[in-house]
Image (tube, rainbow, N blue to C red; front, side, top):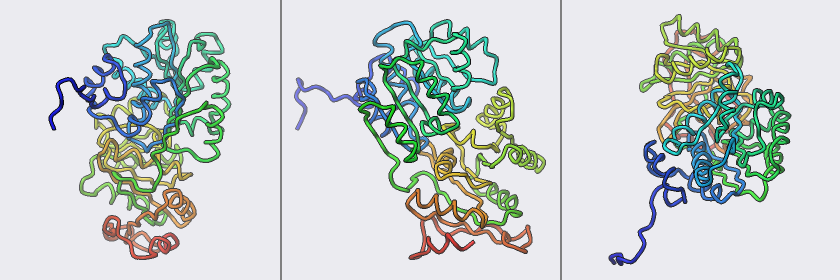
Length: 412
């Protein structure tokens, strides 16, 4: 049946979520076509001023899910700022969030300032004096400026905790509580993360008032990431790494290590072997960290060897591989690390080099995912084997015999 001329034409894309014309133009200019599930489920509630807890896997558009409705509300009623505060756990993530805010605010006249340590404070103080609409900050530098009365938070209408589970852990919680005490009691609270352990969720629930809870993380399937455990002896890790980096389809990789020293050493070893590798770890100056990230983004470097400061929120297009050279310390860290590949609907591969000592953590990760992780076998990686053994062998993706998952967890 044809539509009556008097019938209203249904809105499509982001327009159906209730966003205004100015933000919709910026969305179109940014190349966004259709909203992702986390955006569809949360944007209307944020626009209505409701508290939201949004849980979705990495690379699914969580930043735009809070940035778009915040920008829309700021354009609707202009007032001196800052009116929105976004807290992030790392400088790299704060800079990335601020960049997305600026992209989505083009043409609106709204301004975003960043506040984090490791760089000179004067430009940040100057930006704050200009009363920006949005401040994206790491807690440490923000508290320092707050204590010196160089930033004002009494006008904040919306608070966002990105990577909220990490912001509520014991490393950040005291600082977050001090910042919360400086904010207006009446405000909107938005918490977004890819993971939310039960004990952290209890803290989040105390902060939120009548929230909309959207949890898109249930179930163990990671649709765009082919991930596997590589059982290996500690001394054979480097050989296994080289073979994984030689896989067909390799474009770029993030290699995660447990310690800063190991990240530096492994990046140096890979560079000496002719690879374009760079380290990213917490002892580096902010300028050096910035150069490493820029070089990885523009493909000056093909391999980023990093500690967990690169595990959360960092979005670099085209990362084909994530390799856990060392087993992550928690199931949540596993999810965040491997989520650096397979982003925005693209396919990626993630491998974890696991020794016998890692078997307990492997089992914990599998329980968290609710499914066994396939094993990728390496010949020449066992005790007494020659390091120059044959290439890697794997089972077909998703194939496993009945009961094989349980058996493989204990067979190293």
